[in-house]
Length: 140
Ligand code: CMP
Image (spheres, rainbow, N blue to C red):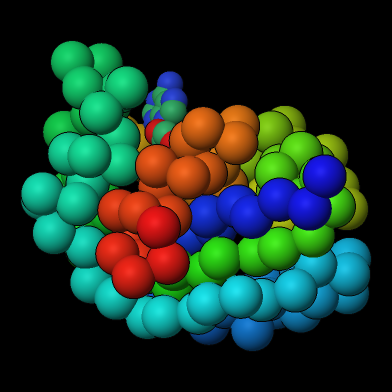
């Protein structure tokens, strides 16, 4: 099925100047960019986006990190792009993410309270619809 997924280049990726490299990898894989917007998150957006993580020990540091600078919000489109982008992104922990993936090639552990792992990608069609609605009201 043609799917849409919400991808975020997190503040560490934007700050390090990796937005273009990450978009390049998405396009090189063959996915289409349906929307791209540089935005600063708000506590309200993050409370919705990370509702499933509320109460976890890394939730506070995660929200603080996600508010630390602008994020690049992206909607990508293509056959099975939800699974495909998660494969491109690699494992959550950038230290062990496979080389060849965004996190494995470009990320590392910085010794901080939250894993700064450059990108977010929706994990299911349900999450994608929900998250696209959060970040791009008009595309929902
Ligand atoms: P992501 O999977 O996109 O969304 C949740 C984020 O929380 C995750 O990326 C990491 O940035 C962070 N995270 C997840 N698990 C941990 C953990 N055990 N310790 C610190 N940060 C985490």
